[in-house]
Length: 60
Image 1 (cartoon, rainbow, N blue to C red):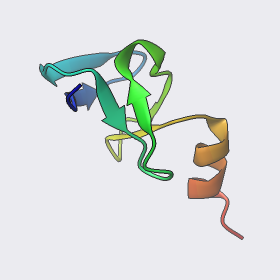
Image 2 (cartoon, rainbow, N blue to C red; image 1 turned 30 degrees about the vertical axis):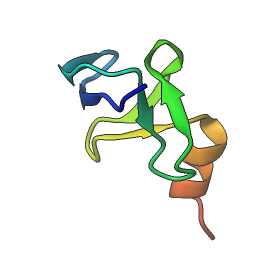
Image 3 (cartoon, helix red, strand yellow; image 1 turned 180 degrees about the horizontal axis):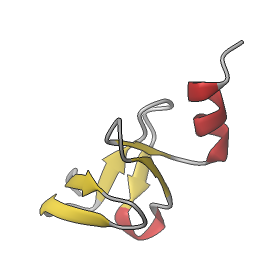
């Protein structure tokens, strides 16, 4: 398995470099491309789940 390179857009992503997974920006877990549901367009980051999004943006 190898890491993919993606460009995140609103509601979809473009594959820049073929691969099987991307890395979560918070937890560093591998996210299979077929399971990728969460990302930030402005930061160009992927997230494993809503829990990681919460950790990223709500660190009070």
